[in-house]
Image (cartoon, rainbow, N blue to C red):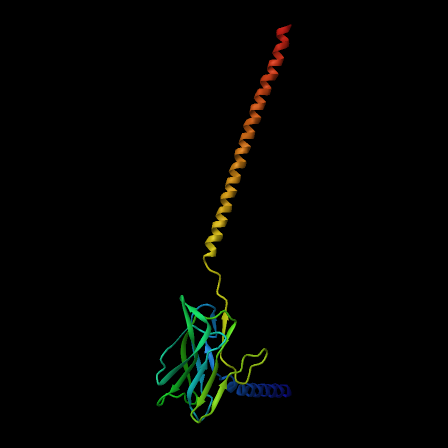
Length: 241
């Protein structure tokens, strides 16, 4: 009985601890993110900025996404979000960005979505804002600083860069970029080299076989000539006697 009580007490304590941890972890994890979280350098990606509403009494009415200044993007296009208007801010870039052979001197600096009517993100809801980006720069990651404005005027700044080992209080959305896979054209070249090696090997084997046959013929000819010479020497003494 005592053992059962101890087990029940330990289980209750574990459940309380898990509830407490999950209770505190839940709100902290509800921050603005970019989805998917990974893309390939040099390519194009369709991502969505996911904005949850963390307030219990007010709605999210505006979302501002700042594109990283050190990694300008040549092509930025958006998908209409019902009930939201979009404002696009651009900036000069130097050196220009090359996109499909064209030199671009401007790049998108910030995207601002503003809710109209009853489209604001209400408590317990979230909204996604799709964007197409490319060509993606050859960097390890892109940090998109984001501002979230609520209907009461409160602004949450999701601008903290990632930190090793700990999660910032207001982390900015981060898109991780991976290197492109090696081109498939390298495979035929490798196969051609392998075929060339096989041809060389076949030629080498053929030459060796030819030399072997020639040596065998020469050896047989030597034996025949040697036999004839021996027979001749045996006949000559008999003739003299």
